[in-house]
Length: 335
Image (cartoon, rainbow, N blue to C red; front, side):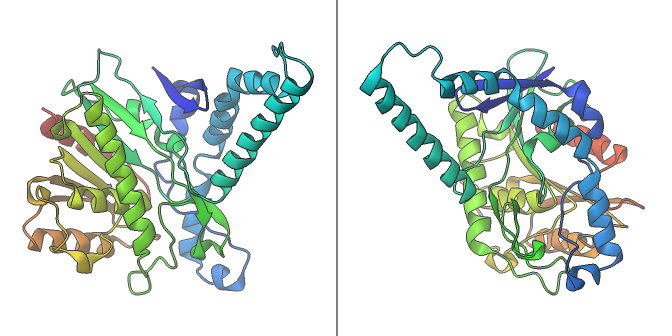
């Protein structure tokens, strides 16, 4: 199976065998450890640093392969190869191209656009369902693309896997340094986290747009699952709970419920019909296990269908047992 990513007018491909083995199951939060305040976080921050290293090799491979032939085409374009006009027309074309490049670069740096998602089509025919999976803080869609092969569908459906990438924005927890993030994060412990309402709702709206795009491509909403790991799980939950269309389900891994005070008031019309699979490791030193468990219990108290899975000894990561549970879940909700 090959992964396809739209990059401008070109498409880049990479083989899952090159990067899939370094799947970012343990990726989610990456922080700067240069300041005294950050160093004082001790064990938790060391766990974060280890998680940040988990896909370094894979991301290097992905970065190289993403460039591929598309970079050659762009280089030729910038060099003017193939242009048949001369003089003023060439200068005008070059000026227009440079303005577009500068505008695109400024937009990307300001965090106003999302890179094109990674899309993995099923090997056994045309897609009849879709799974939108959001990465954690500091990661990209490439980091989770290997999940398309590491999570067997067990023949339940022909799933189109969609792996979006968050915008690059300043993150308070990272000393204000820019990184991919679905929303700003000021802390990791439950008592200190202040929800970034604006960006959480913007990111949830982006996920809703991805859902509607799949509907427009012929996938029924009841065959679409939204999911996420860590910070991505926050957005997946938010989008699913507020969705105006009926979804197949929601997957929330090593995460928590943000904007809790909004519920049940902001539940969408199908929230209580959405089957939620939530999983958390007991040894999570980044987002504490109890934080995730209390989120699940709160949603259950509001009448939602939440299957909370506990993984003994698992840190801020995923494991084979969790992937097996996810496979069984997909077989059920996409049947």
